[in-house]
Image (cartoon, rainbow, N blue to C red; front, top):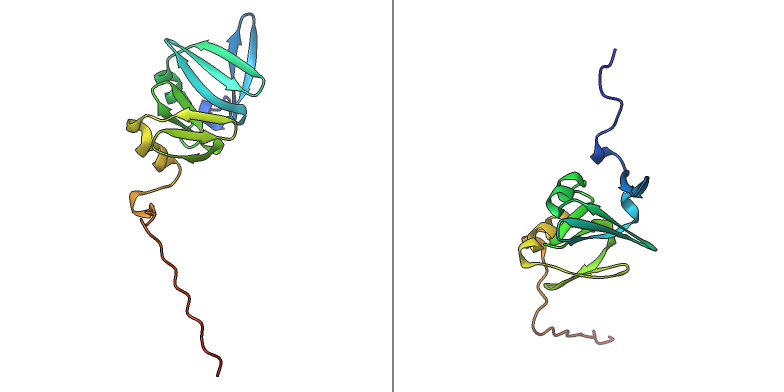
Amino acid sequence: MNNQDPVQPFILRDFFFIRCRERYIKIKLHSILFIKARQNYIQFVMKGSCYTLLMTMKEMEKKLPAGLFCRVHRSYIIPIHQVQSFDSNRVYLEDGEIPIGARYMDVLKQRLGITVSEEWQTPKSLTVSLEFAEAS
């Protein structure tokens, strides 16, 4: 007989519920565009909706699956699957852009599977020479 709790841990689910007035609202992880901090509140921003919850970013960061989300700024957590590109100042998502803090850059690279040795440095000048074989 298995005595395990039938309720799955939060990180094994692809959704969670938040309380909004007298209702509980289902938030699907893949529908989150980003999470934004507002003092001791956080906002879940999704297409067409936004929900505010009394919770700190640090608390939310601990609850979210690390492989699916990444904190990129003291005020922002983003879903990894939304990342289209990034530079030293911004993360470009499917539906907008988010500032990136310098202290979060290494974590973002790690979550995206980028290591320092794999980074490709663009040469300052790139010359291409073509040699044509003479027809014999």
